[in-house]
Length: 157
Image 1 (spheres, rainbow, N blue to C red):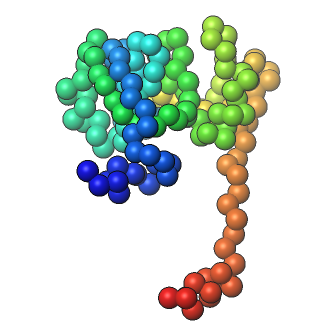
Image 2: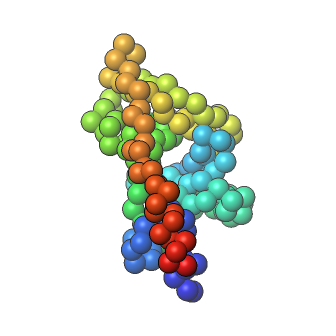
């Protein structure tokens, strides 16, 4: 398979499929929109995939089945003891990382969905208590493109 087919729009520019994981499926993981975009393995490994693949995958992969997947390591949230998935963008994940400890109670606010596949919440605020909730930081600002940059590219073409 050609490399351009292996790299998606969000895939880092590294060697394709740098990690292989294998394990038993514990549950499907819905995203905050209610579509499945991952699997939780019994060893707490999360396998993510594009939601458009979910329809086929949830038909053939059920809890208690063994799976093997190749991909890249990433982090975009945490799975709670009750199976609820808390999603956060990477920059907010770094902000909230010190609050997320196994066995600790973690209050939060966000939006999401609950369906027969589970509960998934996009986190807006987290804290050590309901009185100490912190708003997730906005993503880092992208540098603005200056009209001169566009002019130079047009001249180079």
